[in-house]
Amino acid sequence: MPAKKVAPSLTADGRIWINTAEGKLVGKGRIELMEKIKEYGSIRQAAIAMEMSYRQAWQLIDDMNTKAKTPLVISTRGGKGGGKATVTEKGEQLIAFFNSFNKKFQQLLAQQTQHFIF
Amino acid sequence: MPAKKVAPSLTADGRIWINTAEGKLVGKGRIELMEKIKEYGSIRQAAIAMEMSYRQAWQLIDDMNTKAKTPLVISTRGGKGGGKATVTEKGEQLIAFFNSFNKKFQQLLAQQTQHFIF
DNA sequence: TCTCGTTATACCTGCATAGGAATAACGAGA
DNA sequence: TCTCGTTATTCCTATGCAGGTATAACGAGA
Image (cartoon, rainbow over all chains, first blue to last red; front, side, top):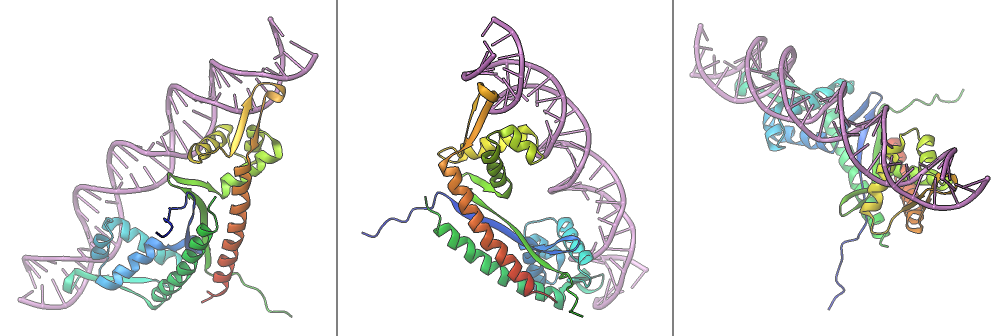
């Protein structure tokens, strides 16, 4: 019978994000939002997929675009489909970098949790 | 003339803490608070040193002690000096572990910031 | 010129909670 | 038995802001 694995009583946890001079630019939530926008081509559909209001999604994007010199998401209104939204090249770069960064971070958390069983 | 060092436009940032099953146990602030308690032997003096109210400091300690099975800070009231507070062995262990964990985390942040200059 | 689904923006409201103020409780020492 | 400085706890309030609602603006296609 193998040793029973017990959940550690204490776990290492945390959050990461990317800052600009004016403060937080993107974290986990905003990265996921951009990924949904890539998938749907629509802020509204992305918001629904993430179970947040359109208003909140729009505010996040507006904040991101304001802080970044070059926009991360471009949107147009009217026309076929009512409008659309696309992630820019810089947005793509941020997504890729954050995900790589986050992977290393999650590894650190797991490692530290292992090393800390009283 | 050496190359002028410019601040990176984007920086990796984040926060870490240690969780118990009931949620956050300690983060940077609570660790510093415990270190001040070690230094002064007094919750009130520690609170003053950290520029927070006694009430807030006490609540943090109470929350920590409630979540941890064994208390991290022990306090007594009355007597010489009016009372005192001391950090337990388990508290000391947590301080040491968190600081080591945090050091590795800060290195990760610095490394990622370096690798991310657009 | 009308429809349609989206983007963009203004407005409002409650309600959680951060934080101060006040006070009780305590025990060694004089 | 009184003083003193701390620990422990209750009460209150104000205010910031999360989050919903409503509505204007837009342009391709029919």
